[in-house]
Length: 303
Image (tube, rainbow, N blue to C red):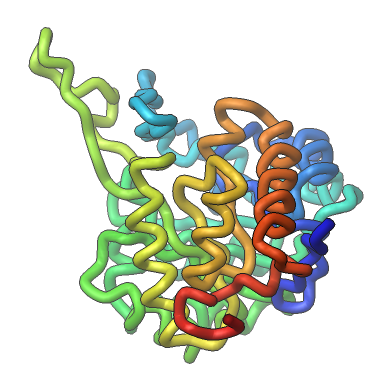
């Protein structure tokens, strides 16, 4: 049996799977429960003030285990989430706090008030279904500025979450690394939409949303591959991890760990057990002793 344990910027994970942000309810009890199976858990995006989110419908399920979502980042805000975060921290898996804001000041406020209650802070520099969300990740200078300012107010590792809708994701990655990021999450969902041809109207109430699931995976693999060749900090690969072999593919591209979202939406926490077992079976079949042995091998390393 292969060793699935990995080290991620000093955090020990029992397996490489991480609950991706935005998938399940943001209660401490639920995050704690998921942490029994996942290597780490990420909260939904937390903003300075509570957010109601978009009107329904917010989800469109697509073929081949893909989906569109336009939730609008609903969350309780800083003050109402502090106790939930403390509860989540009593679980067995590291807790990653995802933060979002409409300006740099807001990012800093959330990180300063909540960051040190978590094991790491993931900065949501791109969100395709909220106005202005993409501007942070589309500019290397702005993305770096956000990270450098957050680094001044929290002691825990900072992860920059990047989106695919940019000219050069590797340039953004280099900028956030230079600014002090401890890691990168790649990638966020891809802006997309679907129209009901019977009515001629968009299916989502917000018109457009973020594409996730199997349709996103090839894009994620390419982004991870490009980033890995340009930075030295670890990557959390996210996008279309539905099976153990999907996880292996993202790790071979350069991810140290993998975020799991759509599979959890469909199956619940059991998805982590299944994907971890499938990854273990794959590693055994290929003769690898450790999950870490396959990180970046598509670049000709560790072969």
